[in-house]
Image (tube, rainbow over all chains, first blue to last red; front, side):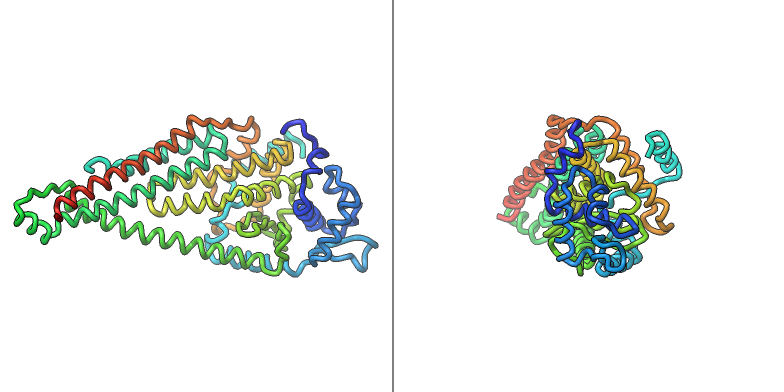
Amino acid sequence: MAGTGAHGRAERRSAGELESEVLAALWATERPLTPAEIQSEIGGGLAYNTVHTILKRLYDKGLVLRDADGRRGAYRPAKNAAELTAQAMHEALDRGPDPIAALQQFVSGLSPEEERALRNLFAGGGA
Amino acid sequence: MMFDVYTPLLVSLLLPLVGPVIGRRVAPALAARVLTSAAVLTAAATTWSLILLTTALVGDAPPVIREARAAGRHLADPVPEVIGVAACLALAVVVRRVQRAVRAERRTRRALRRLCEGHPRDVELVVAASEVPQAFAIPGRPGRILVTSAMLSALAPAERRVLLAHERAHLTHRHGRLVTAATLAEAANPLLGPVRATVSFLVERWADEQAASAVGDRVTTARALARAALNAGRARRSCALSFTDRAVTRRIAALQTAPPPHLWSAAAAVLALGALAALFAADATSDLVGLLWNALT
């Protein structure tokens, strides 16, 4: 576990996992990204060609769009399905404690003192 | 019969005490599995005990007593009528609670399926274009990971990998099923509520450990949790979800130490507790069958 660098891990990521990572990277940044920018954003020793293949696959599935008016070769995420999902999610959240509260969410609530402690973690660790 | 039938109840009082201790000392993957198994066994045993106690009311039924007297047989009645009636009422409550839990489970599944509409089936990640930082796993075939755009943009690249690996671990190890099993156990036996809470916490810890080994870095994993929690806290509305059980802080603290060992002996002890409840319930059954056989023939 320890001592295995990000590079060693890259080979073991499956195509499906890489698709998720590329898609996540495109959503995380506000602007369209070129394959080279995605490559450096994701890191982990991913080959340029691999990034290209994954983008092509995501494009075929309708999840990313080629940026028409921006720079050549840049991609941005397709919004339609994501907006519908957000709407459905908000409706589900507004209906009350279930059903999403019942799920295992990545993180749950913080008390003010916990929040202070976590901020110190960043101050100390340098983020 | 006298004691056997009440033993599962005793176990369901013990299990919530043992749960948190096991949860702290034993590897989360092992602890979550044995606690869930023990909870399910215990809940089945207490429910069965209620059925037995209710059935024992047959021994108090006037026709049975009359018949036994007529035949000149002495009727041993191990269960006082009051307890029989109380058990009958408790059983009705249990049935109602389990029904409600199953219905809530179905409602959740339906709502979750709706969230995936419009996304290709062969893509693991479902993004929601929302300002609310949120992430969770959607069990199913295939399982999906839902993350909002706000959560994705709050995290650094390595932290996004932690998040994806964490949610992926929930799907790969079918954590949804474990939690559902523990929830149903709690529905059947409310005394097991704390055990369900421990299991919910342990599957998060389990996914954290999986994410840490996938990314190869416990510090980054802890930082991803902290950053996600800080962002989620800032955006969280005052209603629902605002409870705090220190869960995130405890998870982060656990990531700052070495992963807990697979303590098989402790795990076996928890499992034995559940098995004990089931065994006593089974023993009580044969006692009751014997008694009723005597009374009715």
